Length: 91
Image 1 (cartoon, rainbow, N blue to C red):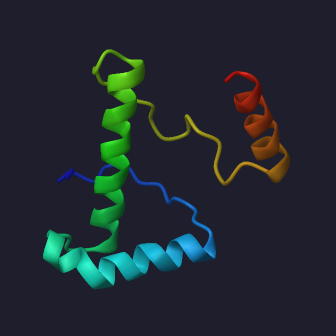
Image 2 (image 1 turned 180 degrees about the vertical axis):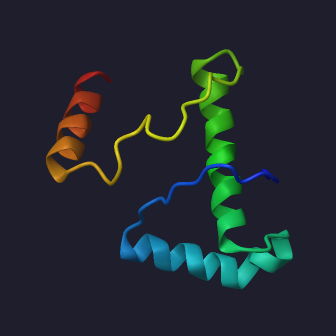
């Protein structure tokens, strides 16, 4: 887990997914050593980032993307549907 917190952003979850994240933390977070729900989300996110690095970047970290590199907020439903269609056509 990162010890420094110079930058932050908030993920968005559906209500059902958020309920499951909270339930998992309440049921097993302390047993697994997570001090907070943020720690659980951070660990899960960084695990996926490492997987993406292995798969798409020869296991190397990418050059960092600082605050402002991403558009704020969720993608619109139209953008999500377009991306889903493009992904299906490419596989």
